[in-house]
Image (cartoon, rainbow, N blue to C red; front, side, top):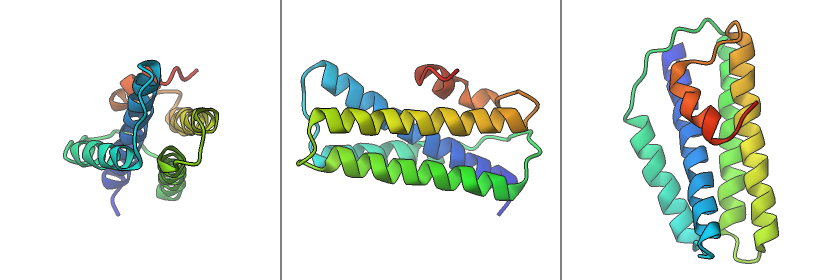
Length: 134
């Protein structure tokens, strides 16, 4: 798999995960509840839109490291969707799952940044800011 494809997959995954977090937070602020199907359908819609965007990346990072980052983002996404979709989870549990997902986003973007001479590709700027990564 080419590095651009891997990076686009990471970008799509991080963007979609961040959008699910934002949707959940906005619903929570309005005291609304998202049902399991709404969480999954929202993620699928966002992921599809993200995949349709193709960016060129100017990074020189080992593809094995990028695969690890991609895997971590995918795992965080699965965990978040599972938590938000579980009707047995209370809001506190769901909020903790959102915080874990945000941590994963920031941690993996920080890793990309560290491996790229302390430069984050421009495509990730909005996700970095919206998740308040440091």
